[in-house]
Length: 323
Image (cartoon, rainbow, N blue to C red):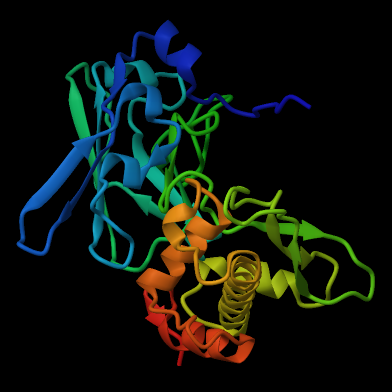
């Protein structure tokens, strides 16, 4: 069903019609290597919607270095947004903010940029820089920019009337960082199972060496009608709490189960002749190899208990070791 706006909002059609002359530079990702040298790369225009970080920065990896995201926005004619028949009055001010969220990394935040857009015909440039800490990112990170009403002195009919109200009709720019390569976002799905467990892992792959690491091959299935489901998924925007601790525990248990199942199958099929280099790009086995290497998971004396102990000790969730 189409959304009905109760007050005027900014979208691409509005910006073109009012000659706002808004331009958006492609994001730039960067990090400092072990020698302190800054390595950076600008995203190609045709890849802005989904940015594979390891494709853009092949030598960066999540637990090795911080990752910096930088982007610039230019508004050639800010006056296009102001007036009694525009989105807000000439006496008011507009802000720009960004929403950053990731279920797989278990965080979300809304960051207002330190700028005020005023009624002026002069070009203005707005910069956004966000530094993600080492070990903070996993899977997919969504980034969306939007305009909002920053301050109000005067209002007219069909205009937002309270500070903080969104002035964008959807995000005016959005992208998704794919942190560990294509298809690597942790496959979490939801279902409804009356009287069922809070979660369960479902294995669908036929060959971990070639089947992709996504919900078609393996999934952590959350029961959305379980009594504590809302507490669990509502924890992603908090730094602590029972729900967050439980989600961390679920992910660690799932990682251990996936590692054990995939390695066991390879041992049973190929004995001692296999290695992780055999894995197809984006496959279950490639992701398992990444976990084993980066988190130093012990698979020599393979048992579910040994794998889980290694995961519990070494896997970092959201920049924090489990205690």
